[in-house]
Length: 61
Image 1 (cartoon, helix red, strand yellow):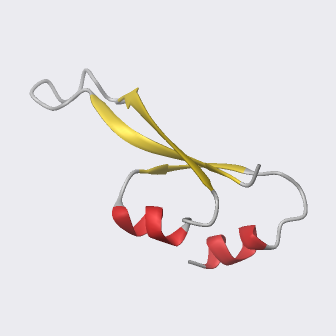
Image 2: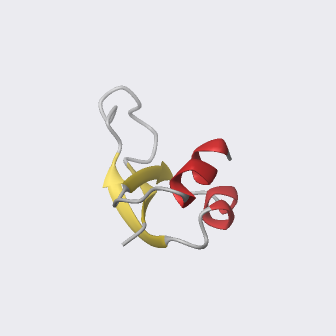
């Protein structure tokens, strides 16, 4: 929550990446949010797990 408050006052541009969840979506609802799906970094470590996950790209432009 502190990061969100700081980013509300940034004079320049920013881009932020977060795991997708409702709390983050609500917290940053005043910014531009794009949902992307990406490969998990540890694909080889977790053989029976999902290899992709949803990520949010949050920006003020």
